Image (cartoon, rainbow, N blue to C red):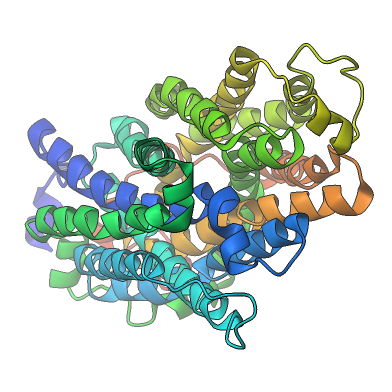
Length: 482
């Protein structure tokens, strides 16, 4: 303890050169995990019929999206399992394990056989596909919290939003990489060969990416804050019980979920996923064009993650996150309506899908602009969220406490949007009915966040390491929070 007390606040922050090494190593691995996770969605239109080919076209897409959604459903369980390991054993070890599981599961999807619908075992590959998707979800549930915590515990308080915003880019970068790989393979091989077998190379490519990331991550050291906590014998013996059994910390977890992360997840997945499904399945935009539109919008919008993260260091995380949720909720309906009518249609007001198929013209610049605007909303809610969550919880239970609300918010409230919105639109025959769900969630977050969430921006992460107490001076054993 004498050594710890002799060190100034934020002594654990890495030197500028060191923090960038931490960011690159953490972000590269996390980007690859997102690539693996989102590749499944990027190939919906191409391989859904191969695994669910006995269904009608709309049903086949819906079944594929349901299989896709299983990965989101188990993310919170991965957060519990690997969050506990991360708070007991360490951050570095945990995200080496999650990266390996993710890479092997994704590569295995690329080896899955596709059987003839007349085969008695036609259902078996689809069932195995769901099993692999569940493994992907579990792995991702343990990855993000570790990487975000690892970077934050190296960063100085006054630039924590800026530095952690680079880990926020990884989700978008992973999606962007998956879209680019799919487009390259599809255009090099041609549609016929790519649809037949070429899509498998996109999944198998994961092995190369994971090997590279593991090579880089193995040389990383453990988080300095966690190392000091472990050396002093103050690590949690039961992070799950301390995180969710204690009323004070449980309240923080619930406020983080409903007052920040749920709305963030709804905005994120509507802008970057449901928009792609909407273009392909409703507007009948061709596969290449839809994915190119999303990729270009993401490329243009990605720098704003860092802008919003840095801005949150100055004006606070909460203001930016809630403003992004509110603006998105107000703008989603007009944006999607503008997308749908983005072309020289004979009758742009027609909302019948059959009529649109007969006249599939659209304006690519308008589509790019609309999705770019939604990506800006994403950067507002997502850029500051890692720093916000890290600052909300003490070091000894940070991995577990922040991971669960993040993965419920993103995995359930956000990740289920493509399948729920598509199902709702099909059931009501209304093209925009699917937007009701994300708009409702975003508005809920605005209300809860405004009324009940205290902005934790720039708190001292070392307080509980140095003196074993929370910011209020109460023992972390009885009040593990800020």
